[in-house]
Image (cartoon, rainbow, N blue to C red; front, side, top):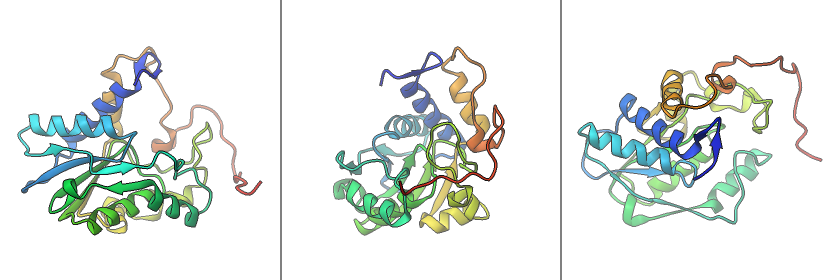
Amino acid sequence: ADSQIFGSYVDDVRYRSGMQLAREAPVPKGEKVVVVPVPTSANAAALGYARECQKLGFKCTYDLGLVRNNYVGRTFITPGQADRALKVRRKFGVSKRVVEGAIVVLVDDSIVRGTTSMRLVSLLMDHGAKEVHFRSASPPVKNPCYFGMDFPDPKELIANKCEDTKAISAKIGTRSLAYLSWEGLKEAVMDTKPSSKTWCGACFTGNYPVPIPKGKEKIEDW
């Protein structure tokens, strides 16, 4: 909660990203609409999203419909699709109290390959969710990162595999899907008054701050 980047608290940026996402893509109308974060990195964004939706006049609640197994590591950096899918199944439990009969709006900080998103939607539906809608608190990830985040192959990214947002929604099995816009993300960050006015968003925009290697592949087996 106290991590800072350029003087801005990460928790604050995530919360404000959720607020901005609510302005751009609020919850659907219906009975028993519940906003559920993908724990734990999306908790702040989902809370900001739910509160801003309520402020805008939409009926929804915020609840912890997913429970994370903290003894399973990160899934999107796990080499191999089969291993990632297995880790997702082991990583999350579902609170039936929260999701049964509910219109679930699942909020995550991003969608990378889509493996986790797809499995979570399936888990929620299996536990009685009436509908599942997805909201991403960042823009579509379309470009590889060469600066520390482990998704170097653009062919693995679901935003590149699918034609548009509607196709991604169909792929992961949701009733609807919306991403925070790049302009919205910048606004959320700048609201926190960071010490730097520029930062890297190449994974969203393709505009890298320095020359990048071409034709390089990551070696997964070592």
